[in-house]
Image (cartoon, helix red, strand yellow):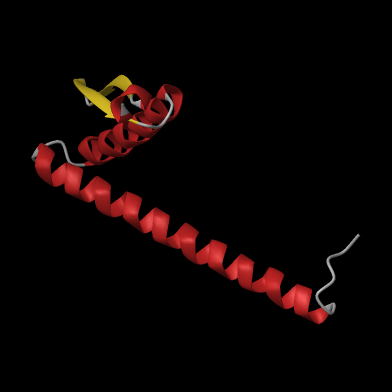
Length: 94
């Protein structure tokens, strides 16, 4: 059965427990939750009267921004690697 491979993890975000189910290992899920918790706490600390829903949307936008910047950096590095390979006739350095 496919559900046999699911990991169940309990995490806390802003003091509220969430029971998550997925295929990723528990330590990884806990790291993700801790990251989201830290982002939310950062926003709530700067804007204490902001409703939780809006804080969550702001955290999602910040995380999406980080992701897209890292993706652009990665793609730029991959282009540089390909250019370097072509410049050496396709032979990787020893």
